[in-house]
Length: 508
Image (cartoon, rainbow, N blue to C red):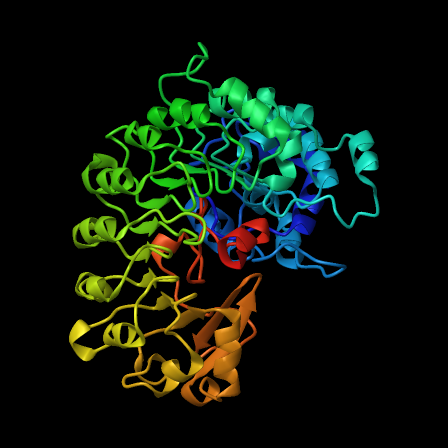
């Protein structure tokens, strides 16, 4: 039984943990609480007096209950747990199945929520064995009417309690943290997470840069730490915007990831030598090396073209701010673009030294890419319009043209084969906020089926949008369950991008 793509409502989980003792006290409803696995749940024993629906295979319950899990955590006084709460009260069989659905994806919007969760999984180990994901992507202590000192004194979520939770979640697969959790991560947490969670597949520390977080990583994940295992079981790793981690962390961690498939090192101090030390057995399909100032263009190109671990790339993010550091020179672009793997569907080369001379290298790509980011390059509007010429058979759904001097509201609307009127297959066009506003003033958007959208520092024109959602688009398997385009953060879990992850992925 796999991890659900949707997050459950905390309100329904809160009801479940309040009544969780029933799952343990009524022992007839539990077959073997010590051997909880993905492939079995705990159903009544004895005479089979269950209704036909209660005799369905466990996998069927998993598929059905996944549709009852709300997409977003509850806000205000709105109740969104009616279906799951009703199931908990239906029968012992459905209670057990629903309990597993609720506990396997544990979402923690605030520290008191975590305290209640920890009490339950500590007192009832069977509940801890159900946990597959610990998700702190929505976590915050802001807005609770407390000062920072009060939060520290209450001791709801600390390094100690976090370590206890990891010990109890013996079957944990995914640990999703972020910058707000950074001050609560110490060496004990890192040791427990990396050394003592044998089934761990995904770790995300998006934006964490607190001094305690840095010290913990530096102490535990050091090349000369004698306790370091030969390999880690991790498949998906995100250290997105973990700017304070020293190079020693990457030198110790990356060579020990033989099963790596998703890697996000955006805005970190990773080095070329650490990248080259990734085991050849890794099969990286999603890779982000955005804004890594210690990387050198020729070495990155050599890594991408010759390392066995990146032969099947689907998503590649090399987004750089050209005003600060340009990774790819014109020569690097010349070497890289013609030799990218055929599996690639999303490419971000914003900030690369790309001119009209490189157009013949770009055109073959647009017949297989679905996402392409060419921001802050030196292309002309004629180059861009040529991408959508009939002979190119463009499959692009998303195109980023932010910061290109030739891209103006007039050029987007009035030139020959202009994008706003002729690029029929394009779904999302990312532009600067000023350009999007200018297109709206020209009435060049709504008349051609486009609407303006913005979030954080980014702005888009979205085709045929009929709701308030920023980007209504198709899901793709390589987007890890998300429906949105142009995400600059590699997802480590299946599901729509939310919380602080949405800001880092779509707002920055």
